Image (cartoon, rainbow, N blue to C red; front, side, top):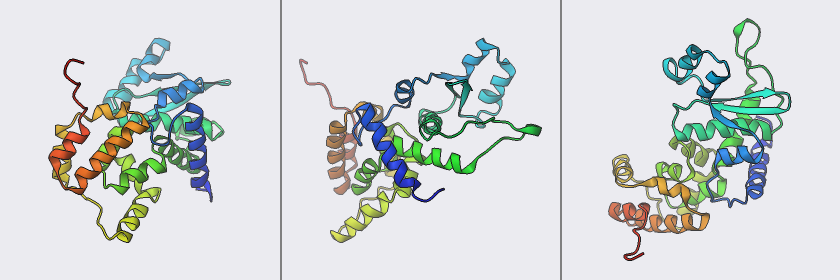
Length: 251
């Protein structure tokens, strides 16, 4: 990856969020971003109606459903992003945003398959799109806020609509985890580190889907409450913090 690109990606992602009216702690909707740039996003199964072979679609969605997640089809200056509908929401968020990252970075498009049936692959462009996609989905500020309170990656992933793996990678690769640990050491404390069994219990007991719909301010309130629960090592308190509040009686 070319020197200075991570900083460039942070600046570009912040600029895109500002254009969308999003705070650094807001969740970014990949399809909303695509709509902003006039790029339709459709499942690959829709291509059957356009003449694609059913057997080919079945190969990608049933027989070998892990080999394709999303791609961009170009016709002149028009673009269309197709995605694999059998993949989970977190993976699709990253895959669709990855395709949009190529557009934002003005990467030169090319054929997917070269002579002899070999896949054409530019590793530097793919690495740049990977990093920009992750940066768009989870800002460094957001990753740092989660890391500072020891929030499990599973919960941060639920909030930002990404996979646990991407949330973990973003927190580590951005340096947010190191910064949070250094700050905690300076304060003479240890960051909470829940056991895997505790995290599974919390995720099983919580309806975390509501976290995606929170505003940045609402998320900060939830995060603050979760931080107190994590610091006290209280699973019941953490579960209460992460479940949607009950509607007031008579409302």
